[in-house]
Image 1 (cartoon, helix red, strand yellow):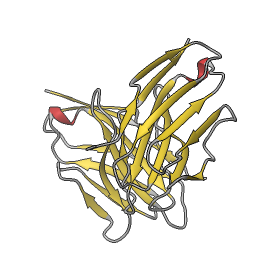
Image 2 (cartoon, rainbow over the protein chains, first blue to last red):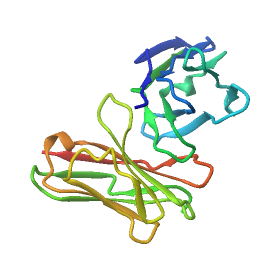
Image 3 (cartoon, rainbow over the protein chains, first blue to last red):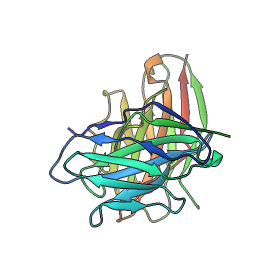
Image 4 (cartoon, chains in turn brown, yellow):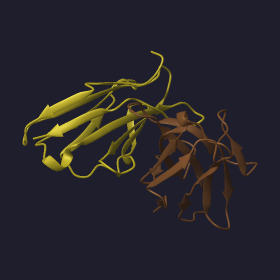
Length: 113
Length: 112
């Protein structure tokens, strides 16, 4: 069965600093990868996804993630964070484009001024 | 509607009672998912519908949990003989053929 590991439960950073949120998944023949974000008192929102093609995927708010098959990783990065990026970030994997998602435990990103 | 809606937003019940949680998916979405999120954990898959039928119910923890989607739109998650360990946020998501899942705000269930 698939599993997802988010190595950091909490990541505190200062505003405008770079950040990397780590995600590793158990290997599979084919896999679809996702990052979801949950802002305080809001529901889960899809941030970005990898289905196929280019291994580097980007979101509209400056985040990017790179699919690394050999390391079974899908780390999320942003070169310069804002206070408004404070949220909990969940990495998820699926065996099919419409299959159920397997989530990691989440990483709480806290951006300080 | 514009997004996935779930009712009620909060439900407090007593141990042993029966509860129903409702999910209204985005119009036209054929796939509907139920997840459960306990404190400090990521969402945990429960069941997935494709149309009216349950395509995968492997995540339901035991036979006290049941879900239906009789007309291929609204879904109801039913929990019998609730236990304190059932306390969690129950999330619903729907998706179209591209597989992008849109989540509702969740129902926070508290079993006293």
